[in-house]
Each structure stands twice: as C-alpha cells, then as structure tokens.
Length: 472
Image (cartoon, rainbow, N blue to C red; front, top):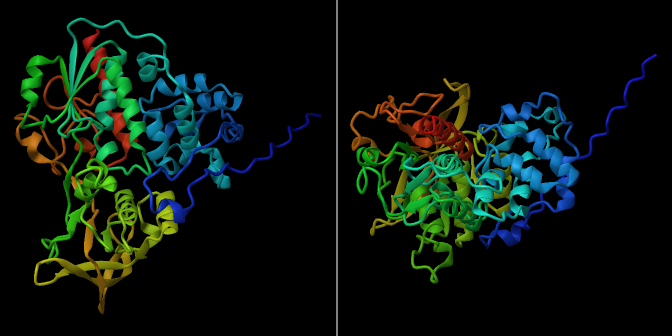
C-alpha cells in the first residue's frame, strides 16, 4: 500500500526589519532595512517550487521567480541575480516599489494560507548584495558585453522605468542608445516622485551608472517636443522610444484652489525629492512649509506625500478620502507605515472649498461628510453626501494627489502620433509600436498612471521588438 508523503510544515513568513516609527518619521533614510542573508535563505526555503509557478504569471516582466528563489535557498546569490537579470533590468528598484501583493505574491499558492513567499524582499536582497565586476554584468548579469552593432542607434525620450528598461535591452544587444531627459537628473519618477525613504537615490544611481558604463548616454535638460522633437530623432536614429510618463496633474476643481499653499503632489514631491529640499539649506530648493497638512487622494502617491510632509516638519497630517480605508488603492504596507508614523485619516470626506486669509494664504479646507451608497460602474459603493454634515479642517498646506494625465507638449509637437480618447498614445500591444513606423512608446504615456513594473514591462517588450528589427 502506497504511503502518502507527510505534508511539509509551513514556516512563518520572515518579517522585514524596519526603522522604528518614532525614529523614521524624522529622517529620510530607508524605512525597510532589508533581509540578512540568514533571513533570505529562510524565506526562500519556504517556497514550494511549484511545477507550474503561478507567481510568474503575475509578474509583468516574467521574472523566473521559482528558479531564482531556489538559488537563494541554496545560498547561491550570484546565480539568483543572473536569473533575475534575464528579464528584469531594475531588480533593486522593483524589490522596493512593486505592488507584489497584487502581482507575483498575489498569485503565490501560499497566499491561501495568508503566507505568500516574500518575493519582492528576496529580489531586493539579491540585487542589493550582488556586486557586479563589470558594467556589462551590472546591466545583463553576464560577464561579457554584446558586440556593438555598427551604425544602429536608438533614442529614448524620458528616463523613467520604461525608457531605462528599453535602453537596457537595446544596450545588452550591442545597440547604441541615447536617452533624452527633460530634467537635470536622470531617473524620471524613480527620482522625482518616489521618496528616498522608500527608494534610496543611490539605488537608482547604481542602475543608471550601470547603463551609462555599458554605453548608454544620458542627455539632460532636453524637453521632448521643445528642445528635441520626435521627428528630428527619427531622422538621426533607427528607432525611437517614447517614455515620458504622464506628468500633468489632476486638481479638485473646487473654489480656492488658487490660494497660496495648494500644491499638486507632483510639484511638492519633485521639490522635496529632486530638489533635495529635505537637505535645506545645504541644498537651495526649499519646500513650502506646512504645519497642518491635508493630502487629498488615497493611492501610493498620496501616502508618499503625507509621509514626506511629516518628515519635513508638519505637526498634523491628514489624508482625506471620500470612501473608507477598505477602498483605499494604496499598498497595504504603505497605509500601515503611514498610520504608524502618525498620519491621520479623514475617511468619508470630500472637499467643498479651500479657505484663505486676506493675503490669499490657505487657512483651512471645508469638507463634506459622505456615506457609501449603491455601487458605481467600478463596482465600488458610490460615496454620497450627508445633508448638512460639513466641517472645517485647519490646513496651511494642501497636497492634491488625485492622479495625472498625459502632458500634451510632446504629443502636440508630433504630427501623426495617434492618441486615444483620453489623450494617451495608441500602441500595438504586442510590440509597443505607435502609428509612426519605428517609433515606440510605453509606460504611463500609454496606460495612464500605473506601476513601475508595468512601465518596465512595456519598455522590455518595445526593446525586444527594436532589437529584433534592427539586428534581423
């Protein structure tokens, strides 16, 4: 009689060490401290090594997750890194900012027990501990560079995750790549949008330096559609990739939004992150000071803005959201970290107007109390106002984090570039090619505001198509 194998006892998920909340709320050092080697091996050893790993289906860049985790469990971090780099150009970034709980970890079979493998934490550990010996190894994971393909050149407009990934794919194939960035520092949203306490600047710099050493040149202060046009690039390069993001902020449209002290999250975070306002006066770009800060929105950007305001010296920080905490779209980890640090949540509230003093400076915001009614088209219960339930919240700095739209500067300056009804670039979903031959696009300028890893997936697909065409 055949005996059944005893079931493997599932060890608990290994927690990530973090700075204490009362310490981290006053500094911009990384909150999550990362695994030790022992922690990483223990967490990797929990993996069931499924024959059909569903986790890979949840990853937009299709990292061979099962395989790299198996190497971590064996203690072979070099092999793990090489496996990750076969599909992921920015593992140290993805391990920190990807919404793993709704992607790879969301597909993990152990999620049914509430204990999915900590894939993102393991990816971060591998990327952080691996030391590349050459630029080629940093970019590709292999200790050899591709033979340069004479005369083949690609231009990438923008230097966010989509463009960096596309550049990495092309550079790894030996194609010359030039990246044109509007700001004075490369990295796009990784630099100006995501705070250092979530994504340290040196992590982004390491990835960019690897690309630069592998032959990718970065041209800064080049505004797509103004300083350089797509048509000019088409005449000089064999292919063009557009990865300029969607940087036009959405505002509330309520009275008083022009008062001094009302900012978009884009502007506020750019001043603090890219302008290094957190290091004032050593850096000369100060942020607007606020003691009573109110943030509108409930996504990851709203959490970033609220937690940044705390670190910049705010006494009180409120997040205003017209639904409940259950419906907040931000990552659970970010919500928990914000709450631990002292961010307060004004749920079921919607702004009616901003109020100011005689000098047009913001003093408060008037909020309407809401309740949840019947579901709307998204399937979520629609918030409806409660009659006569209105209150004022003292506010001297308001940050609007309601998302973004496509910036029309480059689009308006590029005849023949087809857009959809929302003003984003239309592309072939498989190749990323636009209506202009050999002009590709990916990231938020195609999808609207989305995640870093989705932008990287688009950059990877476009890069692979470019390589296939140029080296055929």
